[in-house]
Image (cartoon, rainbow, N blue to C red; front, side):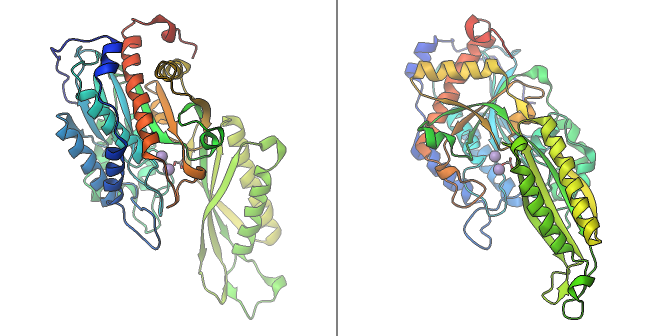
Length: 446
Ligand code: GLV
Ligand code: MN
Ligand code: MN
């Protein structure tokens, strides 16, 4: 970790700070979003593919590092492939306030998920460095590696490593091309034997903030440009392998088949029905991936692998639903003479984010005259993982029509700039609260 240096410049009052601080610029934000997008691979159709621990992801981290170095910050890549830049505070002993998000994408995804929080961190760094006043606490700007669980099933790998929450068995998990997580890391210069070196000492961090697109349509529907997240859904991901009997499509009568794909189809519909049961209202179940073998027009499917992603704000219900999906799948397959094998890919808990950070966020918005809406997050986030070791807050900006994980994903750069204004305001307020100078917001409730 770069050693924080004491900064001799005087600390000015909050009002003075606000008056002299450069304002976030939507044009600069749009240009950075465009540059990061250029590192993604265009596959079959429009959209960005910048998978976890891939060269395109590394290229995006390189841009982030370059921008922050130009601002005069010391930048390093940790043992997990996360990029971290530091702006010293006036007290070299004070724990840091972190800001950041991720730079990887899902396959054929959009240009904003994660990127908005990283580009927002750069713009916040620019505003906070280009004023004379310094915060007491050091500021750290972070681009996490491998947040999307799309490649290896496990989400938030970079943040789980720093929070010591990555199970070592995950390193053996293989992507669709048979490349293991450990191999993917090695290919981009990350040593899987040395991941523990990336662990954060919680004593060195005071708070962590993530700016992110909403990925839903609440803000748009209520006409708010800023969302303050109170809780984040968990996700349980399982792979169910249906084993039937491959056979000739012409020679095998309908009553003599054990068709793995037909069984999977029935399982998928049963899972959808389960999610729509009244007691599960609010839970989400998605079967987003299916692989069939031998995948031939003239052969009955002998094997079908489906992934199930169960999201909920209620941890107990999330687990009960996961068990029920497996039970229903077993019932369907037994009736059809097939059988299943089940792999647990990931099991991330929902979290309630600390009330005191949200209070700081709400007070910041009120002081700046920015209306906001408090809301939960259906998607998962690095800040949700980091919150296990450092109190975290998440600020949302609207997603057009709620679309996300698709090429059509879009967020207005002016809204991102507003989000950066909120982040910078929160940094200053947190800096004061954490120094013990502002009692109201630090009266912790949660
Ligand atoms: C991250 O985008 C997730 O899948 O929740
Ligand atoms: Mn994201
Ligand atoms: Mn995502």
